[in-house]
Image 1 (tube, one colour):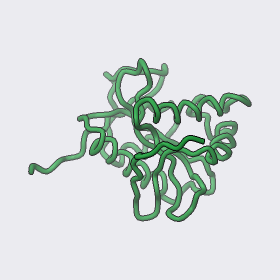
Image 2 (cartoon, one colour):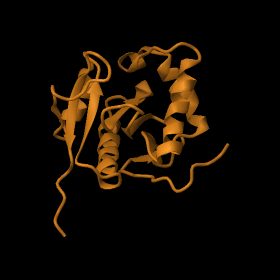
Image 3 (cartoon, rainbow, N blue to C red):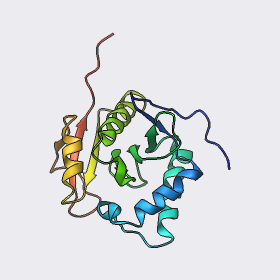
Length: 176
């Protein structure tokens, strides 16, 4: 399989965020075909998870960035994905993600990965703002984006009808 070289690898105290690998698909597929994907258009039918996974990898190839796969330092087991993406025709850059492994819930991994991915989105990719589109009823995602000061933006363009859009301000940057 071709390798995406020179891709960033943000790290936190416990996690490594990296470009997706072919070996990640099994965990992605299991999550996508389960109720865990209900806020992201799922559960998906048999072939749809592969198309969605290929979309993530293709975004990396075409734009040089997309959501990272995150896992524990020293482990190749993926726990989820998170980070920036900008779908063709989308109104603006988004920050999104999901935890794939139910055993990884409630341990702070999603928050830790989201903080690192958000920092990467602003510090490396630039920009003054980004949004997170969240399906109605997804209280865990709302709580996650509100922790780093994202606020609901009822004026933002909505891609999927009914979604709640939260705006992330760029982190304060010190003047050099």
